[in-house]
Length: 99
Image: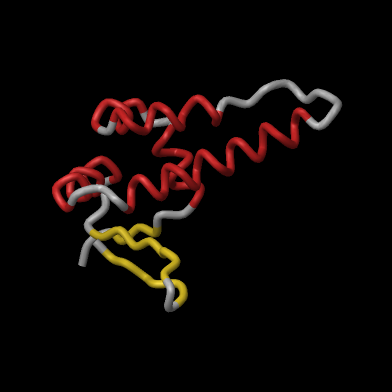
């Protein structure tokens, strides 16, 4: 059996910062700009930056789960995994999906 990978927030963050992944999946570049860290500031700007990062990861996860089967195969190649598991919410609850 090969390498299995869970599509966690950390995996998505590293994927968004990976130039090879951005080249293979250009739509990820739109989420990458929200992951840059800024200097700590006052007046709640840091809190909004963290929220933007969380939203970027959530949006990237949503886009990844909606990719075509061929694109998901390419994603497995980019991540170096034989199997990718992620969780998505449905009307019935949380569903585990393995590709």
